[in-house]
Length: 212
Ligand code: ADP
Ligand code: MG
Image (cartoon, rainbow, N blue to C red):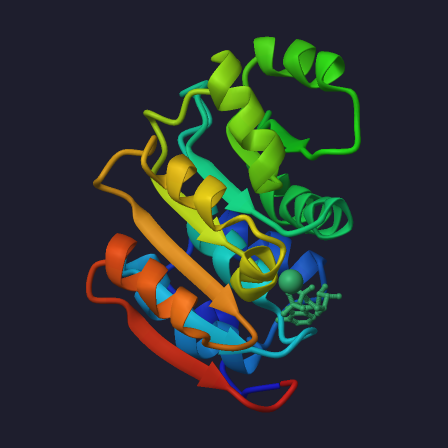
């Protein structure tokens, strides 16, 4: 764990209180290195091991830009698997407890699409999705990304290994150009560099070796 407290960040008091209630007082290394830049709106490409606290790093950032009164998808997190998407959504729900009525939906393959379409009809602020299923929704017109302000590619190298590159590119093509794009990956293959070069603007690069 780094020795930097969350209280040194320019976060709303209610967000800080909620972090304290979650037992989060000190930032992990990746949080300390990324959050000042994330909160200022900068793009990020980060390499960090599992368990280093990446979800809260991007989650705390994207929640500061969320308008609860705007019932449109403002943040999108792409994950390689349903298990990871479920974990991310559950951490985001805890991080978002200080905001009222934030709707977070997971859209993953291997599950019937009908109930997902039903949930989408009621609107959502945040989507956590696997690329294939999100593309299905975009083709059907059941998801719109024109109000998106934050896009996260979580475990990007695994998504590319699974053959999702074309889907990821198609999804990003349907988001506003003025957005924050955050890329998290355990490794930096050439494909990741290509995605970063195509879709990020002057990203901050960070690499965190240790767990904390
Ligand atoms: P990663 O995505 O890097 O694998 P996670 O975001 O899943 O890591 O976080 C790993 C664990 O660390 C989770 O159990 C999470 O609740 C916990 N955690 C994250 N940040 C903090 C923090 N600042 N203080 C205490 N625990 C934290
Ligand atoms: Mg993670």
